[in-house]
Length: 141
Ligand SMILES: Nc1ncnc2c1ncn2[C@@H]1O[C@H](COP(=O)(O)OP(=O)(O)OP(=O)(O)O)[C@@H](O)[C@H]1O
Ligand SMILES: [Mg+2]
Image: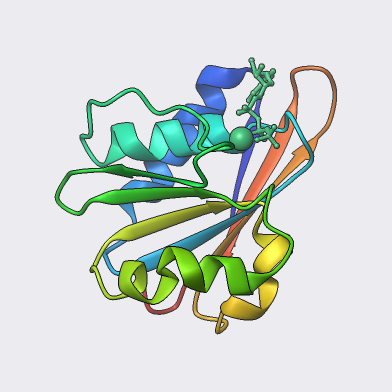
């Protein structure tokens, strides 16, 4: 397990960049933590770590944003999904086949699509600006 203590948004982005540097595609990263924990900030850092220069914003309304790169980063926000069936309509299986890094906010809403090989990132709020971030799993990444 890897752990970071974050004191600001930039620290959380740095943690995301470090994690991304340790991954090889294909890999799914499930993100857990309450609203405003910093999941999107962490994914922004992952993009930076993958040398992706696009601006990463929350895909809350679009559900998925795709960022070309080597590997590409595909960012999901499952907040608005109530079941994994909707995700299969979006083409989850095709995304899995793309040899990409998949980062998934609100993974708990679609937990049954995961097979246990994912990296699990938890972001815990310690204070207004303090966060404890842990990453575990991902044996196949
Ligand atoms: N240590 C920190 N790490 C990350 N964000 C922080 C930290 N301290 C304060 N913040 C603030 O918390 C907010 C985190 O927003 P972000 O969109 O990344 O959260 P989120 O977990 O993706 O939320 P949501 O569930 O709504 O998608 C930002 O406004 C950011 O400035
Ligand atoms: Mg978010």
